[in-house]
Image (cartoon, rainbow, N blue to C red; front, side, top):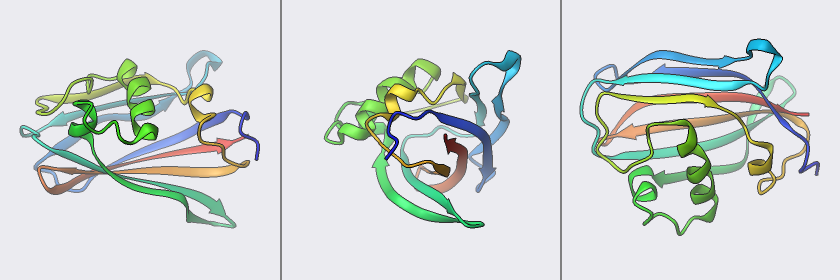
Length: 159
């Protein structure tokens, strides 16, 4: 395994699954001035969000298809933000890094918008999750107030 090889973010896609919850204004990977790719997402919330459960899945490209790979987890984001979800060292570690780039740095409820600005795939963070070279997709399915509201897919390469 090449655990110290960098991750290169190539694309992100945001999908609205229930238009009564969210509208994406921005969902892109920015590569300005040949710097490291960054994720920018701006989602307008159309109602108050009291609970967020996330299903995070990792896929690896095998041939022409993306296949499930190693990780398929369900976690309560609001509990994680309250630090009660810290039983899961993996998500607690990433939550601490994630809050530098977003306004999701508090527990529920969430109102108005969710913004992620200039988030990178920090190579140091990925050292705890070694992966072989290849093409990957990380899929985040957001269940808000008990309804599947949206999905974010991040595509990357392990060089």
